[in-house]
Amino acid sequence: MGSRSAKETIRMNPTVAENLSSPSDMMLVRDEVALLHRYQSQMLGWILVTLATIAALVSSCLARCCSPLTSLQHCYWTNHLHNERELFEQAAEQHSRLLIMQRIKKLFGFIPGNEDIKHIRIPSCQDWRDISAPSLLCMGDNLQGHYSFLGDRVDEDNEESKSGGIELKP
Image (cartoon, rainbow, N blue to C red; front, side, top):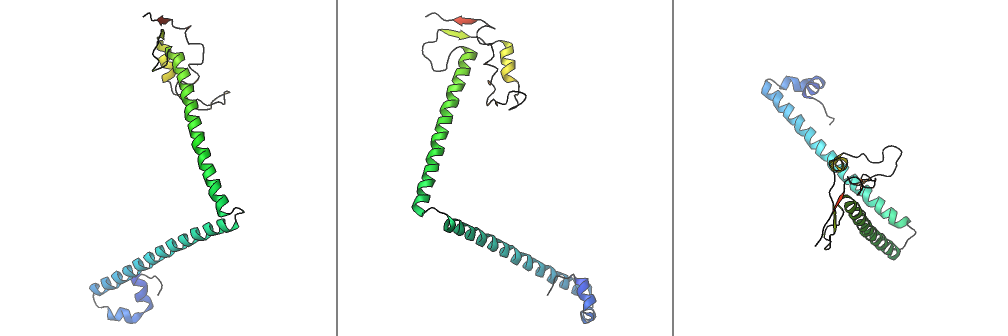
């Protein structure tokens, strides 16, 4: 049975119209049609879920069957990629730490955690405004993006020449 409204059902089948004598009977037909629509939509949803699952399973199987790698080679390659990603993340973290430490040293004159601090640079108000201003990545002629607010603002010649440093004496 196709999906029809209660009015279409009555128009197509005059005997149903004759049998429906009251509005409550019309409500029953409408409720039955709504229930039928609900069942059909739920069934269609489950069919779609099943088809998607089957498609994922078949594509996974085809990818493994058509691969020139054996299962051991695939396992080795997966481990290799995992180790490469781990080492890259470690190197990137170490590189960014060193770069940030250099920029902080240029801004303040010392590195946090350093025991023998002999020189402290007091950043000027302009230095604070410069590092607090929003920086858009890769804008203008300089295509090298800045990954932090310290960016190239510290790399400019505002290290110790702009505002004098303070030398600490033990």
